Structure formats: C-alpha cells, structure tokens
Amino acid sequence: MTEDLPFLAVPAKQLAEKVGIKTPWLDLLIELGSLVHGVDYLSDGYNLELLGINHMTLDEIKQYIS
Image (cartoon, rainbow, N blue to C red):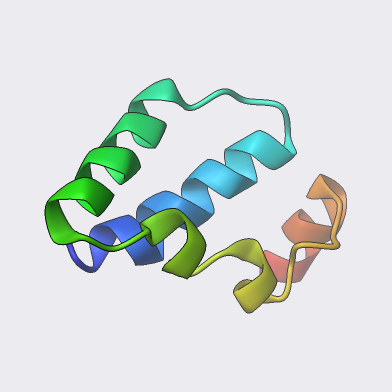
C-alpha cells in the first residue's frame, strides 16, 4: 500500500480526472490509505506535476508515452 497508493493510485486518479472520468473507488482507497498511514498521499504522492505531464493534453500524453 505504501507504494501502490502514492506511485500508482494517485497518478491514475489524476489522469482519469484530467479526461473527465470520475474515480470514487480510487478516491476512497487513497483516502483510507492516507488515514491508516497518517500520510496525505494525494498531496505527497507522485502527481502529474512530478511526472512532468500536468500541462499536457490527452493527445500530448499519448504521444509522449508512445
């Protein structure tokens, strides 16, 4: 959980939100994990800004990863 939440769940949630997909179950997992570990994974996790793709559109992200 200490790796999956900050390094997988947080960026997945943010990517989904970027394209208009709601992630209520992922939100719940991140929130519960944050409460259990006493860490704000949403703020301290590996976010799109750290990945350097926060300013990109979906098409730009697709081009970047291919």
